[in-house]
Image (spheres, rainbow, N blue to C red):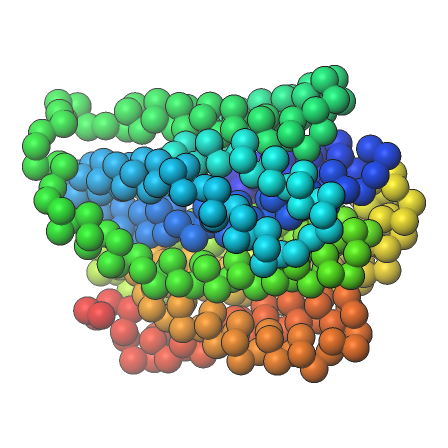
Length: 423
């Protein structure tokens, strides 16, 4: 949880630093640019989630060679994909901004932000694999140190570049790039400390082409699921942008709080990934049931805590993030929707962890596609007359649909003992 909460803390600082400038355009530009990179990078989020599940199962089997081979191959894939993203970044950024359709000034600032931040691609994807592997091998302290140090650097550079040097949204992008490479460097150091004594980089660890294709094949369902989720969030941002820069900026403030909620509650999901994966790898049904019950209980209390925090302190926190009166009052209007999100979304986050640990990734894909296409889009279309309230209502419906559909599959798999069978 501590590791995950440092991630939205960056968005919190970005929003607070830019939200106190004279115009909402810089805040809107970073909202659009950051959303674009969420789609771009988390399209390859399987580099983290898939690595965790596979590493946890290898850990459960006590297979050291499989653990190290998985890490090495995943890192090489991450570097290759990152370099390809840099190579083709111009058409990707242009397409993303066209789809989001912000105002001309916001689009220009977002393009500048994106052209700088894209250089962090290899570092970001390597981080995914390193964090996934460390969590899967039950060394959660490593990612915590790695991300807290790097994100602390990002926060310091944010304040220095934006308030000190006056670089605005450009400074936020440069701070993020420098912090991402710092995080990757710390991650590699942590991983090297975890290597078994006497284990060298022998040829067999690198594997054959089919080994890399197998990693991609196993994780293709996570990729489709992640793209569907991120397209929903991009659609959310785009629809907010069409209602004006003030709505766009107000949604950016509230989405920052949503990221805090999701990343905080994902701490329980990450633990479930590692421990469920170990249970499946060691074929222990007792451990599987015990892990789920404990994670369920902690997730419930965590979601209640977040709800109380935002009910009591939401208006105060919005005031901390932005001094622009029109953005602040607009965000207050939509704050009640945020109160509903923790209890609506926590079950989808928790069950993601269970399904990843058991490598039931096709189920994750199918439930997300159902929730996005059969629930979110119809709910948005039916409530277009509600304006921005309709957008937030649709997002709540998406979270509830994920919880219900994944919960139904969880019960079905448990009843028929499918968690431990071949897929």
